[in-house]
Image (tube, rainbow, N blue to C red; front, side):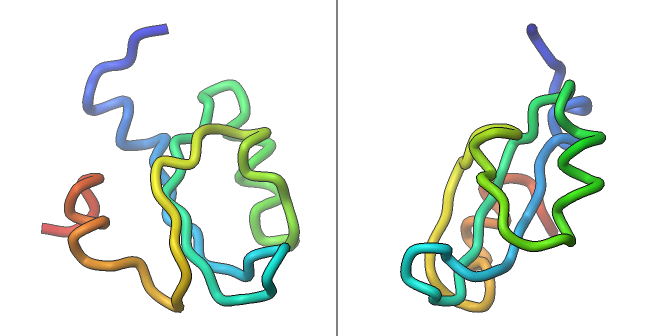
Length: 78
């Protein structure tokens, strides 16, 4: 399914949490599948989940914040 740029932005999410394997602070930039958006939105605040079931992990890393260059690359901020 093709999406235009404007539509794509509403499916991009920034997530901060803990890595389930290491227990370290981590971050993810995700593109959620449109058909999974309602389910993802309902459970994201409930804790542990396998994000790959809801979309594609575009980038991830360890730390308590997403690097500014990563945010800019994906259209977050200016």
